[in-house]
Length: 282
Image 1 (cartoon, rainbow, N blue to C red):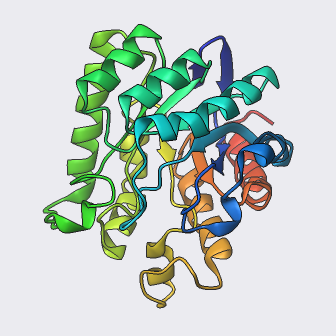
Image 2: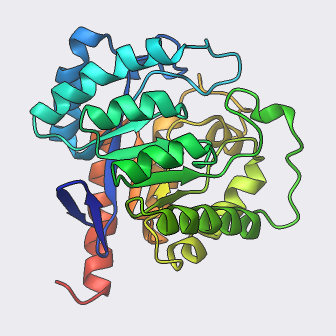
């Protein structure tokens, strides 16, 4: 599969690429991922050298209780970083659910829109179409920062997630946006068991023919699976992240979004070699 990102292409045939997380936020729960404006380009370059083929730039935390930013504040943080990264020749994504910020990022040259609300806002769809950008559609019940407040019981979570994502992807296709990506939304209002069910259902999502992105890096449900409760401040989250992403890659996921780029990239090099050999490519 080829991922088309403006004038650039990534080949993810029988392999999983790494997207590196760059937080220009002051309240991300993963403290080491936060950078100020003056450090952002250096961090982006470091992520790319460590194995990130795309740098995902975000400023507005989705965590429960996270600080609200106005669109102007959010754009002021992400746009200069996107511009600097594009000048450096890096592939970029903007992590935002705010259409005005997405538009500013598109003007700055961003290559992918990463929307946790699933491009359900018509104004976000308009940006994707106008700039012919691919958009990553994520599944989430409720709203960012408030997804824990709505009913999160599922009869068949894998079926519901797949149906929602494919429907939104078809809307984007029909409207004339770039090729949509699908993100099942690990950790967003889903129990540990739900997340495992979605992991088990990844091959079904891959079979839809759309690019699939998994974002599970250092999330609280990984600590739950280790028996430590839903927390992001415990030891072992790096190892849990590596293990989860190895399984996701083996299931055919095209891109994983992570904080610890070097460590995950090394682990995926083994998975990717195995997948290429199994496909008869080596």
